[in-house]
Length: 323
Image 1 (tube, one colour):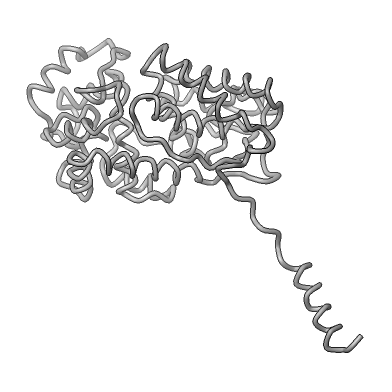
Image 2 (cartoon, rainbow, N blue to C red):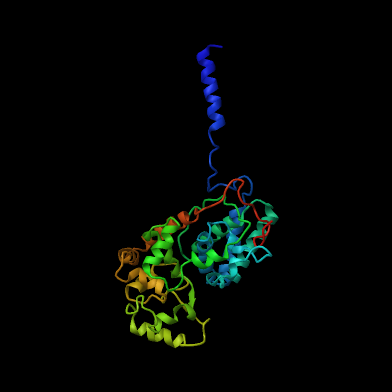
């Protein structure tokens, strides 16, 4: 063998030894061969749940947000307490998800009958969020799949990394930037508040003027109406819609409400209060199509935060406990 050829072969062999394997990536057809009925099965469960209670759409969308913002999209939010792990379910931001967790478990049980040990709980959360949006006139999008599940929960991070209802604009921007999302994407994702409700405890201080953040950026009649629905003390679990016009349909009325100072939460109204996100709110209030398109794109991007793929993590057999 000529020396030049031998040298080339040796160099090629050494490169193969030293080059790391290609990273595992998410893909929209991840289950095409291993569980081709996976997406159809999840969609059926979600549609059934939303038909039964249209408010479930909001909860399923928010569940993905709450999962991905705590150590990535790994279904850690679904784990129950164990002797070694404190569940994220007990964290204040997650206490209203009890029925939502059951929907994900129902989907998982269905998939375990069809293709056991194949579809991750993290992927079920992502697909359910998309299907929930589509079920209430919201956008749909191609969900990238292949996430793996964590074997631990991170309760302390659930308390620190998920925004609170009283955060100011700079705090919100910092929290989203920490997850790789810019301020425009933050506003788009906040548009999920076009659906669902908030408890009195979360908006009481705003409507009674007990906060310094956006204290004066509130419509007086709106504040009076909400005070009638939320007493100064007691009634913490009484709820009001985040979108005062169409709280069970995915549209841009949420942004229109912010423009006239009718944001229910502090974290809603800060998006339109003289800060850097005012222009984005204005755009979305005038162009529902743009909002929906950018919401879908932001959901795809959020769904890739710190994901585990390949041989990392696990595929849980039951979403509420590690294998």
